[in-house]
Picture 1 (tube, rainbow, N blue to C red):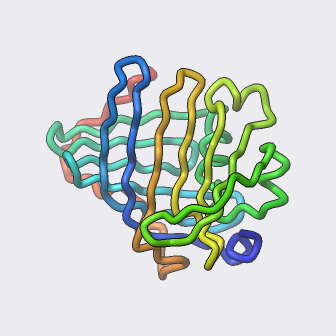
Picture 2: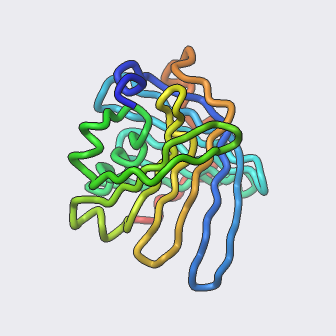
Length: 197
């Protein structure tokens, strides 16, 4: 992980997001592509473009999340303010974070070896050290490729017993990228909403 963190500038991959809601014991899935771009160490940007089951895109940069719904021709913008540091921390989990930084923010426990989509991986269990983070995240599991130290799966357990699991495949590390690579492509005339205001 330390080696891959040192040279991490970005990544493109296919992603499958599995969301489990404990209250109704329901699981939903979305899949698409994810692009992460880190122009400088303290600046992480992201674009996720979901294609299944319906098209939508999520962009994150400068403490703001934008969610674009093509069928509604609407983009919703959220300013994360203080919460942005939690998002940054999560985005960097396994992508550009050395082990020493992980240990500062989390209690880290080795939980064995598993194979994810044919990739041999070490499973780590992370418990947030900060009280603020524990309000949102009970525990995080990371599956780290034994070959290149890149995370191939993340599972975020929430206090409500809900969880979100992100599974990555076709990972391209440090591809050629610009700021445009992680910008939402919004058509003319799209309706902007800011639900927080």
